[in-house]
Length: 70
Image 1: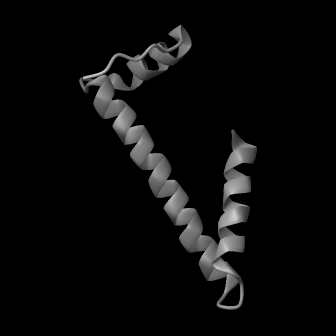
Image 2 (image 1 turned 90 degrees about the horizontal axis):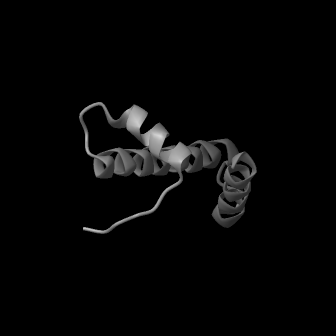
């Protein structure tokens, strides 16, 4: 068990998602959802790129895309 300090606005957002779940469960779900979205992006990009494009180049573009959204 660990203690985290978060901003008040983030606490309110987490609280609105809580719906009877623990904060740990909510945070875990958010992390898992983000990871699944990233994996789906990788799969989608690899299908679009075809066999000739380097997988490292695909990964670099996906990382840049995620950074641009934040």
